Image 1 (cartoon, rainbow, N blue to C red):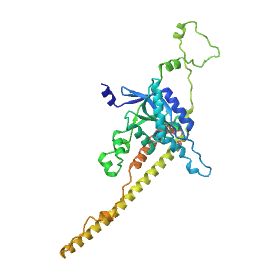
Image 2 (cartoon, rainbow, N blue to C red):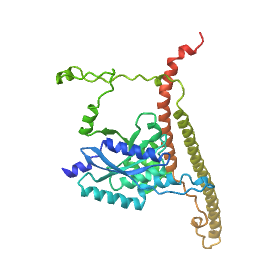
Image 3 (cartoon, rainbow, N blue to C red):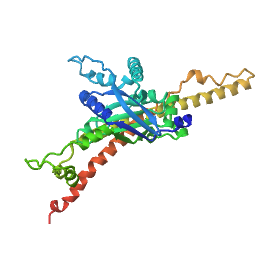
Image 4 (cartoon, rainbow, N blue to C red):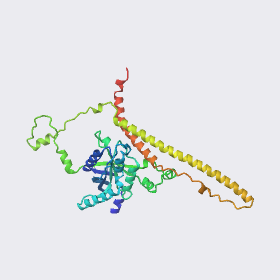
Length: 363
């Protein structure tokens, strides 16, 4: 029975409210540098319960004034922190200490920060593969600091698909292997629903918070029946932000990032086309050499001489190696991510424009 439960994949990730607050605080304090940390919890009946989290230790990188090209060194080091040997030792020590105090101490994944959904890259894939190859019940939490600054929490959970895990293990992302496995950019990541869970003590505390008084004079209830007959009412707070017709600045930034991803995709496509042209040229040279060698052997056989070997082309010619299609797949997945964000941003703006369309058109 226990072995059967271990084989059941989890369907959702339940994150404690304290974990959410710790992730938000860590990511906001290090913004715009990438923040990473590891998650602990347990799997229970198909629900991955994340009960605690700890940030990875950061390494201060000195950036000289005359070298602006190294500004991303801190983000690169932080993005690769889950795979660093020192952080692996740190993570194992923390789990050992948690087991000593008898709390949930199972490794259930890691978290990272993002800016405008820009997290689909090779470093993210390698980190998740590092966790998921040893334990399939691990997840990567992505907290988008820019999206969360608008007032709504942006916290998503991802894991690598089984097909992509097998392909990444073999490290074969050629055109032939992708056609054989039918692996596309949509099959890289699998999103898991996130459920924010509050403890009963915290829920009771939230319900006991009194609302702000409407009148300056507060009339105290005389008995418990008065409280039951007239429960506390939260006053409405109207907001006029929904009537703003200006274009969201995050929409412009997302469009810029979308254009950059499309440009990177075309660069990868041009590299693959260059490989195809080089392969065609080498194959044409090999065909010419083989035709010439066959003609020479025909003449030598007619003169009753020993024919020359026809497999020397393998030593004389070297076929170009096909570049990996993994970067192109990640770029395509990132383009899809930006496209969904643009669609979400423009939905509200378009609705407002159609609402005032009658006043904008001339009579």
